[in-house]
Amino acid sequence: MPQTPLHAEHARLGASFTDFGGWDMPVRYSSDLAEHEAVRTNAGVFDISHMAEIFIKGDGAAVFLDYSLVGQASLIENGKAKYSLICNNDGGIIDDLIVYRLEEESFLVIANAGNREAVVSALKERAATLNFAGVQDRSDDFALLAIQGPNATKYLQSITDKDLSTLPYYSIGEGTVDGVNAYLCRTGYTGEDGFEVLFSSDDAVKVFNSLISAGAVPCGLASRDTLRLEAGMPLYGHELNLDVNPYEAGFARVVRLERDDFVGKDALQELSAKTPSRKLVGLVGEGKRAARADYPLFVDSESTVQIGIITSGALSPTLGYPVAMGYLETDLSEIGNTVSVDIRGTRLPMTIVKLPFYKRSK
Amino acid sequence: MSNPTNRQYTKEHEWVLVEGDVATIGITAYAAEKLGDVVFVDLPKVGTSTTYMKICGEIESTKSVGELYAPLDGEVVEINDVVVSAPETVNTDPFGAGWLIKVKFTSLPELMSAEEYAALTGEG
Image (cartoon, rainbow over all chains, first blue to last red; front, side):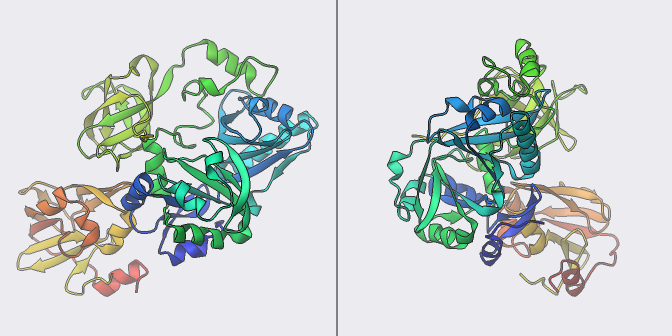
């Protein structure tokens, strides 16, 4: 199983490991809840070097991305970022991505580890159609660390020459971190303010340990999952997959239909014209028992006709009650509506709420 | 954490401490660590009968659900209210204050020794 350049460091710090997207990744160092709490109240550092970094460079880069993704990369200002999706011809989601515009004809695309091959091969296929030759998968060259939490700016600022106050939300800049050349991105997957820092994998151990010395708490993927769930952010393989289209997932705003041809346009145009049969919703429960992925949803405690399914769920560490995301038949998905979830044979009520479950105070 | 030698173990990662005709049952430190932070414990009511290797409760962490298998036939005579109100006790003291249930047993199956259990989990 592939490992990030920090695997030995994680082991040294006492991490337990899990298979994530085909990678042997730290699930926790000591306590999921303590790591979750550290990100909400202090700052945590996550090794996310398993994620894919694909550079799109050269004449025609913007036109190529406009054709390849459902969003319009050419509208992103230099130094800014945008959340986007890459879809197939049927409008099914191959992956969700962050697109950073480095220069006029230079972009960085960050994709999920488990979808690296699917994304790279789709991009290369699309590049061939347009005779564009600037797709470079450089995932193996880079380490990627996420520093997240209210103290993220303070800790990162202490080891970088980049003035972080000049880096607003969803932007990217260059600087040195602990003396190492890096891209600094103000993005994240936790619902907190924070950064994602990309640099040569050769320097991973040094930078990781400097961030820890600066005060950041090493955090594993278990806390990353509960943090992103509270923040209402989708996880590919749970909320998103090839059988889900952007309208069901609540990403109508990400699809820019009003433009020339792009992959999936015909299917997406058709899908956009009708109400989706199911919708991604947020659900909250009472007590302590969490509804988890794949648990079925029903209209009420007596009904045996399934109306939906949970895609992610946990007892929210921050809120203290169960939260979940899932797909529900659209006509039953109104905010405030109550449905019934089957938790290993026990039916419990859950109420549909607006996402996110947790929003940081600014 | 090493497994106390004064008790027996199951392949489902429970420990069993026999005193007279009552067995105290918990999950091992190995199981607690694999589960992660325990946030909810669902235990059988006092008076419930237990059947060897049948599920009699659940232990939930933030990430997953572990099932509690009855390590012997008998009847539940006491449950640990401490772990019900403070489930994290299962993590902090799995072999002590984090015990789960006491069962008055009718027969005692052959279970593993601490040494055999350590071999199973690769700690030996």
